[in-house]
Length: 167
Image (cartoon, rainbow, N blue to C red; front, side):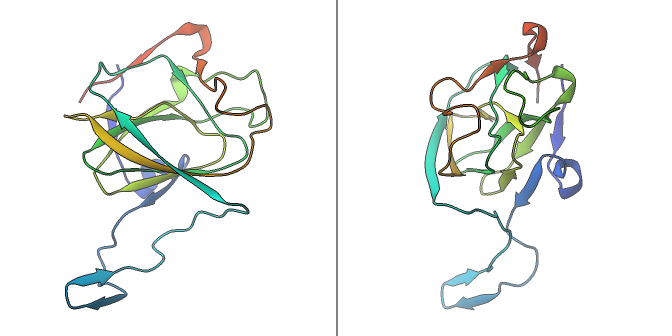
């Protein structure tokens, strides 16, 4: 059973970046609002698709993951905290690669904090911490090298193993 890692720039750096409200003073503000400009970048060369995922309370069991070899992906919980399982890859452009259990980490992501997954990072749908929740995703509008992610992007772990985790 995996433990859930705290999200920090150091603990997440091999998977991507963190997007969060800075602890510094806002870049600009006015009566009733404050703003922090440009807290993080997501380098893209095409349009961005934005979508939502409703994630429902379920057992903390992961049996498959997907990845995007041509693009990064932003994930940000809107109305509750989530656990996001991720794993590094071995070969970015290997169409036969499957995620490996020993590469999996699970991160606790607070409502309003986002992550930007690097190209090729394996990930499953997020798990809600204490109640069903919704998270937003943003991803470049381009195909992966070996097919359209909408068909069936999820690959079982090597050996058809499963990962479990707990709070």
